Length: 128
Image 1 (cartoon, rainbow, N blue to C red):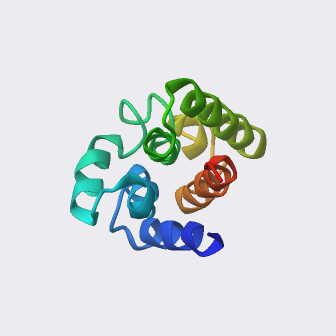
Image 2 (image 1 turned 135 degrees about the vertical axis):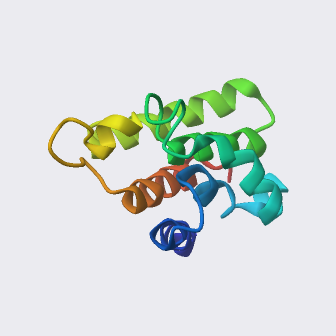
Image 3 (image 1 turned 60 degrees about the vertical axis):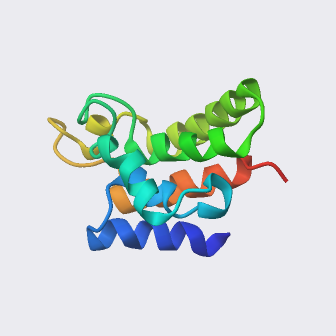
């Protein structure tokens, strides 16, 4: 699955997808969503939830994939918490505005790297 994080990050670098769409569209075998459906589902999460006010879109995309991967809500929520914790530890934030460095003089992490990180941590939490 190592190549998936690179594929997702490249989509962001090319500007063809928002962060949530990058992650969500990279796991069609798990979500059951084709490219067009994944793009529609993730469309509202460009620049994070609430347009930079909330959670990074890549993390939202990871959560959507986990929701499709797990049969139980509690298991999906535990997995998402683990993804969020690992992402926070690596990047210093989970909120889009903070990651982009709005009002702080520079980003904590560039979006393609956030997408790659979200995929990396997502893959660690997928059911085996």
